[in-house]
Every structure is written in structure tokens, then in C-alpha cells.
Length: 526
Image (cartoon, rainbow, N blue to C red; front, side, top):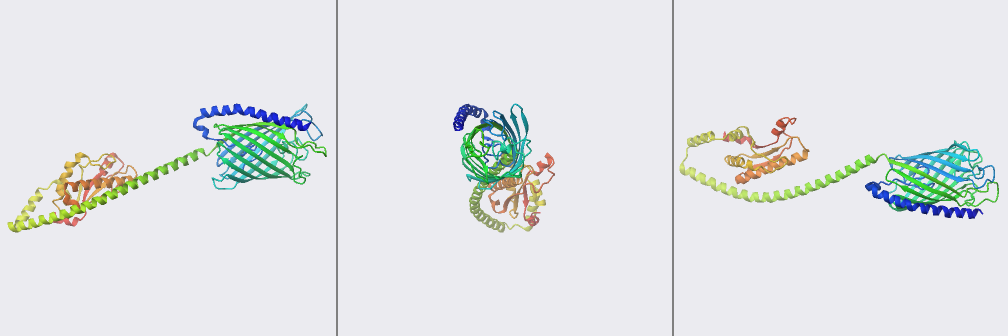
């Protein structure tokens, strides 16, 4: 008779859960269409103790650094028969509730705790506090892409219950939830993960031992295994088997052995919903008064709330990594531009060397011509001095400043903000400056570029160098004979002439100057 009832309950439970899964799939698809990008946030599947896994089979996967999870689970079954004084009376409704939490201390260590309550609904109802459990779970730091997870779990079960529902050896679905003594539990956990957290399959295996402090209670062997099918990002189907038997007298078939199908709906709103049932596979005992280890079935349901407390920190780290990638790409682009500019300068240097040779030939011919003419004209020293004085009197203010101080501010040279192209309005002024410099061939001239302190240091250095180069090239264009004796250098913000604390000071610091490098030669022109 018992086998028939068990098979009927099994068929009814599987049929009910299959029927229930259809509207859940429809609901999850609708939620998927409305949640948008949030569906990518998958809340982990958890068990009764709020660690990862199926209902009573733990996963070796860690919760994750900074993840806080709460779960509430309720169970119910009816006492099918009352065969001795150690079990509730026939037709009693037996319920338990478990409140649990877990927290990911780091990427490999989780802590968890739970508290249970119970209710015996009979002619004389009885309610009370169940077991209090606390423990720690650790996972080996295997490579991130490894499909295998290995871990261990240790827990203390505090027997604060005022009444053990089943006192027959380890009998009853809720034996560990309503203990009156204290137990120590250790588990080895293995998980094989194929696929992704959204769509995939997981295999969980548990082997554990429970040591009791109560006299007369033998050590228990806990065995569990399950298959977790993640058939949709929001839907998880599970099937698991669990066994609890005495290490001193192993009898898996007659001690508690049960099958657990379950359905979990995961939402993108930080909570999951769980429904399922336990179906007894235990055979009746033929000896002793504890005839039946488990009642034919138990039903349960629950909700889980899970929060990633470090989500903001992880998002900031991701944004930082993205910025670093962008900065590296920008640096590579600048390096390519620098190489191209170097190649252009090399070509320009070759062209300038050819032009310089031509200029030297021209200068030599001109010097010869002048010498010949000087000889021919027999210009006296007095005439030369007189002409020099006349020339000095005709010098412009710019010439006088350059020859007296060795420094000339090019105050009529303009650039667009942040760029190195010379404004067309500056060309007439630079034409005058270029022609002026040809009159003093013994001077070595440096075009120096300067900026204010707005912007990054390296950007200001590059801008000042580019502007100095632009002015040098234009002066050589105007007066090719300057090629061999004019250079360019960018100083950025390193040589301010005024404080950068106000607009007027910064404007004064944004400048291009001509500087005589061999100032000892100024005496010849003064």
C-alpha cells in the first residue's frame, strides 16, 4: 500500500510542477521583455541555508565578494500514520520555517547562518523555536575558466528546539531543523558547471558527516547530489537526491532517502521564488518501532533576496579599466603621429641641408662679390663706421630690443586656442622679423614657445613645441638664409612671466619669443 501511495505522490508532484512551470515560463518571458538590460543581472540560485546550490544540496561555487543574501523558506507535510510515541499523531500537519542569510567575505569564503521554527497542528497545537545554525564555506581558488568548483563547509547546529518532532534515530525531513542537542557538521562539496549562469547545467555532489554531542546519537553520513538546469535566465529546474544514515549502521534504503524536484524563478529585481517538494524513497524497516524514516512527501516554498554590496565599486573599477584602455589607445595614436612627424622632419632636414648648401654657396659668392666691391671701392674705415652709425639710427624698436637684451617677444604672432597654426594676420609681422634677422648673420636664434598652466603638462609641452616649430618654419620660408642658425624649442608652462592665477597673467604667459643663444656676438652689432 505504501509503495502505491509513494508512486502516486511522485507522479502527482512531477505533474503539478510541470504544469506550474508553463505559466512561470510565460511570466519570465514577459518580465524579460519589460526589464530591458536589467535581465543581465542574475541573482544566484540558493538553498535553504542561503548558500548557492539546490534546496538541500550545496554548490561549491562561492556567493561572490560582497554579496549579501537572505532567504525565507516554509515546509509542510502531513503525518500519514502514527506508529509509535516518537512521532506526531496521525493526520498532524507539520510545518517548519527557516530564515537564513549568507555573506561573501571575499571571492572564496562565505559565512552563513539560519534559524528555524516549527509548528505541530493537531488537536493541541504546538509551536516553538527550531535549530540555530552557523557556518563557513570555502572554495578552492581554481582558474576562473575552470568548469569545476571544489569546496568545503563547516557548521555548528545549535539545538535550541524545545521539542524534537521525530526522535527516531535521524528520521524525519526536518530532523536537523528541530534538534534538541548540539551537532557539528562538515561537508566536502564538488560542482561541475557547463554553460553560463543564464543558460547552462550544473552537477552538485555533497559528502558530509554530523557529530552529535548528545549521548546515544551516532555519527551521521550525509550524501547528496543534484542536477541544476538553467533553462532560461530567469528559470531554474532542479532535481536532487539526499540521504541521511548512521555511520555506525549504514542502511541507505531504510534510513532517510528522498528525491527533491524544484523550480526557482529568478528575477532581475534582487529576489527569487522557489517551489518544490521532497518525495520519500525510503523502504519501511522490518525491525524496531521506527518503521518509517520519512512520510511519503513534503512540500515547500520560499523566497530569496540577494544584494551585491560591491556593485558600485565593481562598476567604478570597470569604468576605470575602460578609461585606461582609451588612454592607451590615445597614447598609441600619439606615438603613431610622433613617428609620422619624425619622418616628415627627417625629410625636411634633408631638404633643408640641400637648401643650406645652396645658401652657403650663395653666401660665399655674395661675400666674394662684396669683398671685390670693397676692394674696388676702397671704402675707408671711417666710411664704414659712419655707415654703421647710420644703420643703427635706422634700426626698428624690435631690432634695438633684440640686440640690446638678446630677447624679443613676438607680440603680433597669434594662434587659435589649443592649436599651432599661425593666424594669417601674423604673416606681415613675421615677414618683417624674418628680413630683420638676415641683417645679423652671426647670431644664433632660438624660437621659444610658452603656455599657461591650463591643461595637462604633456599637452602644454607638445603645444609649445608645435608653435615654436611653426614660427621657425615660416621665418625660414621668408628668409632661407636663416636655416642654419635658427632653432625651435617648447618650454610649456615651465617659464611663466606672470602668475597664472588670473586671466591677464595667463595671457602674458602664452607667448612666442626670439632668444639669442650666442649673446657674446651682440657686441659686434652694438
